[in-house]
Length: 416
Image 1 (cartoon, rainbow, N blue to C red):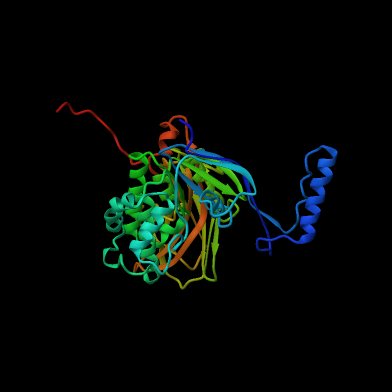
Image 2 (tube, one colour; image 1 turned 30 degrees about the vertical axis):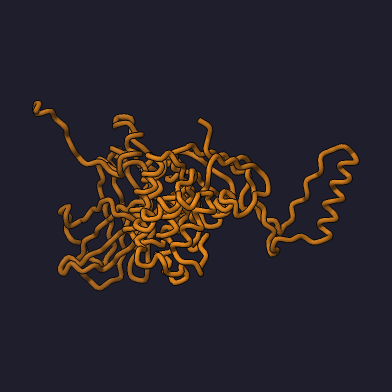
């Protein structure tokens, strides 16, 4: 089956400080180069790149199959919105070719494609007409669109009086229900509340699996990308990197992390915590961790707080800032320590049950007598789990089934 969308060598150049025009001198120089090239019987020479030229996209190529949901990620300014505007035919590429086999419905920015003076009802029919649908085809979908958007009471109100959330709900409902073969959704869904975002994700899954329509989904929300998309395109400095969802989002999130050295440090005027090193089960220092192995974290704690008895809590946090697990000196039976003197701790982790990925440590210090939190330090040190050791289960399983493994045992107890 041929791809429903093909992007071949697409580049987009903008001229900084200039709005849609060139000078007469530049036009004459360009014409002169063409004339000289034709006279010599050669191809026209490429113009020298001006320092004012900015390439938002450079030689981007990928394809999308019917029914495929492809995520697009990248830093702000990486070219994501430019690519979507080219696909939506809002702007033209400087070079390259795009082949679309079907209609394109897009949701790029709040209010895009809406006439503010028209009612919600009129805008539904306007957008359907732009997609090439007849009045009767739109009318058959109208009630379903309004119900999904939850704007029944306001459907005859001019959309200029809609809130941003109402705009997005109606715009998504139109784009999803008018059945374009290619649906393009930008980060604009973040405007909606959690309930509506969940409805949108469910609808996108439905139209891709049941209707065989392709979806391009742009988001900075990596958990949603992982949940929804089978493949991810990472735009970086205008270029494209393409791969399966899990490995490429891991690389993307790793690049988003602040660049630090391997030794974790946190300090303020009253508190300093240093992760000196990580020991393997043989007592040697290691840089990376492996699933299923035993490790020890050696930490040094210096405090200038009043003389108190205290306990230390270390939290393991994933790259989405979700707490995965914790280690508390009090729960492990370690005696309290004093805050008016330096302390060195060894926290034993073993066997490590974290699946491959990038994590960080948070450190909290609690008063042993009152339970009050004295210090709450975030991102004290990075932890990187590189993979599974050979004695453990297939590493590909770990990449697809959560972030940690429970200590468990399966046994057969008979037949029903």
